[in-house]
Amino acid sequence: MEKNPLEIIQDVNQQKELYSANFRLTRVSLYAAIIGITAGFVAYLLYHLIGFFTNLVFFHRISFLFTSPRLNQLGPWEIIVPIIGGLIVGMMAKYGSEKIKGHGIPEAMEAILTHQSKIEPKVAILKPLSAAIAIGTGGPFGAEGPIIQTGGALGSVLGQIVHTTVAERKVLLACGAAAGMAATFNTPIAGVILAIELLLFEFKSRSFIPLVIATTLATSIHFELLGKGSMFQAGALNFGIPEGLPYFVLLGILCGLAATGFTKLLYWVEDQFEHLPFDDMWWPAVGGIALGIIGFFVPRVLGVGYDTISDILSNHLALSLLCLILVFKTIALVVSIGSGTSGGLLAPMFMSSAALGAVFALCVNAIIPGAHLDPAAFALVSMGAVFGAAARASFTFIIFAFEITRNYNAVLPLMLVGVIADGVARHFLHNSVMTEKLARRGLRVHQEYEADVLMQMTVGEAMDKDIKPIPAEMSVSELALRLGKNEPDFIRHQALLIVDKDNKLLGIITKGDVLKALEINPEGNRTVLEAGSNLLIVTYPEESLYDAVTRMLRNDIGRLPVVSRQDSTKLLGYLGRSAVMTARLKQLKEEHVREPGWFHRLA
Image (cartoon, rainbow, N blue to C red; front, side):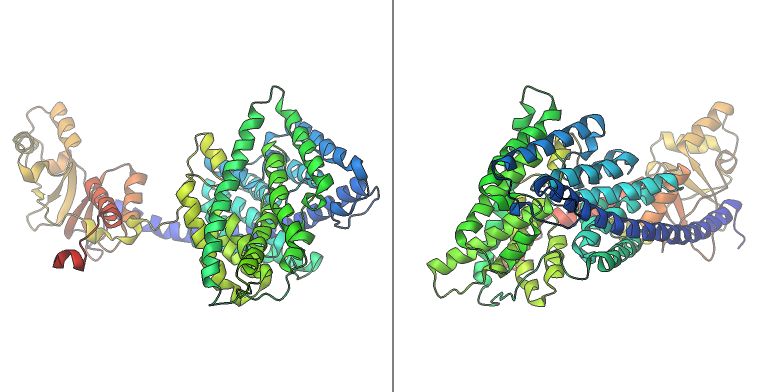
């Protein structure tokens, strides 16, 4: 059967869309490769830029070697250094860009939600520079948050230079962020999952393939420039499975409470800074005063603290020092970040939460001598669980902690503690540590990944099969009369399908078409085929509802005749808006309507 012109155009457009989608995926993947390589070099430069400022300020020497500021010999002058760093970062935020404030990931989220994934190019320069100054002057931050935002900015800028859609630019932004994390920690898988859980909220080939390419190349650059080892060094870990599982359950609850407490404390501190009676340019300096005092008495809170994390994971620190790190690293972090300076949350939260896990294990060993818990093992598990629960990205940090150790025995406790902590944090926190700031600005972030019911159902499952077409020779006046009588077969849908004597589909007429025909010819002598349309946009029973709805939206129509793909005049059904809503209602019922179980039926 010969197809009408619109059907031919429809089929051609489908072929063009398929070819275009494949071509665009290839192009975006090439861009992702560029972003991954660039992010790898940027991570390397930031790593050594932090080393440069640390050496310059704390040791008065010119060197790019990454050094811990806790080893300095400045004495009381050490208190002044973070204040100077805070003043510089405050001025950069005031006169450069407000976007350098914070720990990076919420800012990347905001760009996606409100700015069509557009980030100003200057952020790609000012963010790593401000972070290097903040960390190099003793800031208790990690480099990963700024690298994630910087990588995201690189991806966004490239997406603005070349021709892309908004969705493609979002993918490029996420590729830069994922590559930044992978290049910093040598964790390519966690980088991919981080982008999916915190930025994209989708799992599609159009994003997954570029993400993998970007993180693979960024990690390869890390291999060449920084070596293949992890940023943290861990000793031989004994997780004590399955005997230790009850203790890991308790640790999961503790980690969830810690994630809750940290998030609430951070935003409470931010609120207190909002009440200060002077310009926010000076807030980072105020935070620097508190940091300088804390750092003078507990030097391990200063800087990124990769060496301290390695010491915790190797059981090199005593209980008293672990308690000091747990308390004062947390205080220094929330005060510094809350003041609006530039730095990442991951590394410092890893340090304090690793100390939490080690303290927990040591306390249990003291109370229950036969427990024999390995503090380093509990530190590693806690390190992933607390941040995962606070950020609602537990899967990312389960994989992250595993990639750090490459120890398969860590998987079970990581999974158990991670999900328990996540459940506890969700009970107490409406928003995550990443989304609370955005929620306060009126932005809602939906962090759940779920399959679209419109993609799961076919047109054949949702269409109305009990259709009553009208004959082509029916007059408009007769149809108007029947509509006026509210006859069920005529008012059920907003449009009526027109067939010939052999029940072959010829056209469609809407109620709007009837009104227009009566305005032109009040007698209604024209036939419904003349008043309606014979250039049909159709769908097929094996197509997904998603494809059918997309066709409706693109053509600005509210219904589609359902026909056989072999014979476009063979009418099979009618798909309207109500059928789409019914499909959505079915999904809601499956999620919320409880069915009686066996015990209920027996009772």
